[in-house]
Length: 444
Image (tube, rainbow, N blue to C red; front, side, top):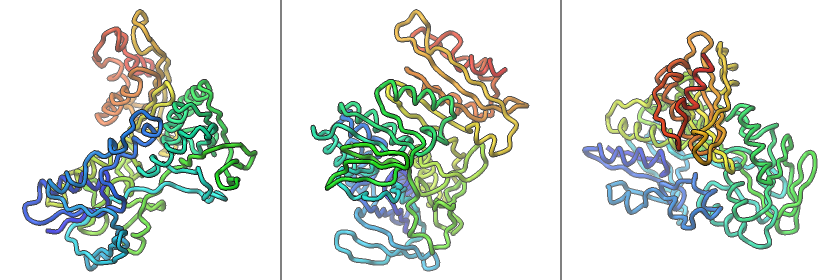
């Protein structure tokens, strides 16, 4: 059996490694466009900010390690097209420009996502960066550390945009964030949580420009000004973090079913609509546990898990991925925040009868040093009080409390169950009634 993975990041390498361990006879091959495999792009903002200085730290597994385990790896190779009827791939060696065909028996599509680059005028000026690849991080870090760079503009108020703000502030620069919508993390957190996040950014001297759309950049050779639909702002460097789109344009004529945004549709086994073709990672959908729909959630956690499931199934297994809750967390300067399950806007869109509770409590006992506020929001069914979603915000343990809510959703627990759950207690970590208990009891 000949198994091929197109893409060598989280999902692709998880699938390849699992398949190689289970394969009795045959070969596992990975074709990757970049120079690296198993690259953790989530570390890029922290590399830029000098939290660590060796970029290879972001590589979870080297090419040599993969090959030692029996996986054939070809980097700087781009798959141009797929012919499912012939089970063939057209592949280009980016070093030699040679184009050749390769046959497969089982195929994994794990091509990830590309940074969305809006059609801003003069986007080719120097000192304008995106942040998705190792080379992006190395170039941005070198430019941002220059003494000539004092004012930095970040475009986009999602995960990368907010994370890179902390990195740039750590380098001692002035930072401005421009967000097209009326708030940051629109569609990721509910309003009361994002309001507190925005206050935190302002408290740290971040200039927050909301409800403005960037139109163009001006400058001689390097960017000097960002022009929006409402004004213009002087800047020495720009970071564009306006989101991601699935890297699947090469599949347009393959017959593989995709969402309108290009995400490959898969089931709980990672299967596409075409026999023996699988997909996972930032190029594909995941089944959502609460929504009962295929959704696009480009998160490393789901990519690794569904990739492992695919690796087993490509070798004759019958593994199932239970689905995703979209659990995610982020550091916003001195605060940490997390979300899982449904937002309130999701519940409205699904036509659910729901209720919410929002509490402000403390993360630990008041007589232990460094007590801080913690905020918790729950979305739950109005009839049986089954928990449908939640968000947390605060310091010292606020983000990881979301894991409890995620388990509660997956287990179909109610707010009453949460209110009486027996959590551990010691003054440095919580109160005798943890904030999660309080949230559950307030809902009751």
